[in-house]
Image (cartoon, rainbow, N blue to C red; front, side, top):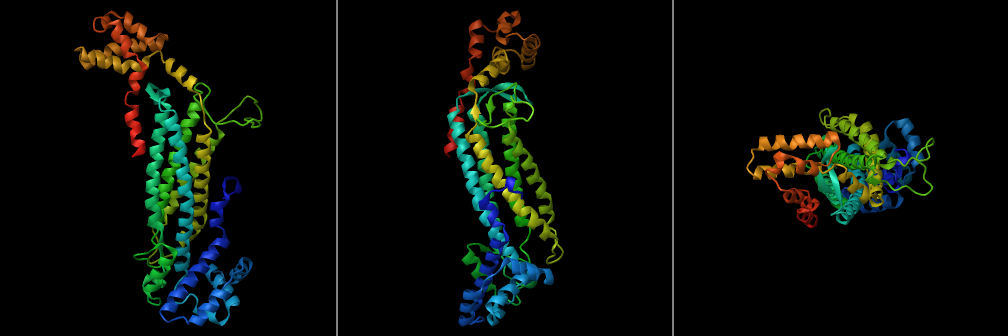
Length: 430
């Protein structure tokens, strides 16, 4: 991934140096297991541990000739270890090393993603609680609906990401597996003890059946969850972008003192961070299709999945890490315009109370159809003539025969809409 959208901690996981370190660790663990089985002399194991080193440049040089990265790595180890290198990679195949390493890299990445998800959950929770009673107009289809609170908006996003966090934990567990089973996964040339030993040392589980590769449905599950998280990030980013529109102005991304919004128009303060997250979410979602297609491999294995995973796995995880961190900063520093929220709510001329009027007329004995027809007619007059809905109700002869002015005033009390907000917020502590 390009540096612009990369953060160091997660990027380091996917660099060749870290990959080769994990390869070496796995190869040594296999030797330890075989030593316990009496197949690698203790003296040779000691030599391997002391002399096993790799050189990235040398591996690249060898690979140019042999056209195989694992063989190039093993050749470089042999150059450094000497005669005892013959005990390395006994009875195993390249995929044992590659796929188990992939599990470790994914697990290391998951630790970072979990940390960023927790951070986002914390800032969403803080905003939800802080603005629990801050009224704003709710919208459906982009049109004024009924009042809600900004805190409740944030609470909904909090629980959306909480669900994703729980799904992510399950997906992480699903990919945390080790396969040291040899060619076509039969353990013909390597004792099953080696797989269990390596898995225990790496603090992951043994794969049930690996054929020769770890089944790709495991990875598809993880990245499907990641695609959902990306979509939730876009959902939140889109809400911010809409609320920052000039005609709404209810929230605004923090705009620093020296920041510039446009090369042409000095007045511009654009929601560029949320727009950026929206774009990245599209890339992450697009990446899920080839990962799903990787599930279908020929027989016990082929290599069609390899190029996809070398590109998409690190890129997707790096982008998700970047987006989560950015969104946490956006929410933490979000400028909340409570006065504009109230002004927008009031600009509806009270139309958001139409359902309350409807229900009150039904209580008075009208059929739903008759009540709806009466309320809709007055509501459309309010809308088209830009007149106060409550005033029109009080002047309407038909309505006056069912509702007094006092009853109408009661209907239009704003606090009515928030009487169950505390009940909803109780769920945040469960």
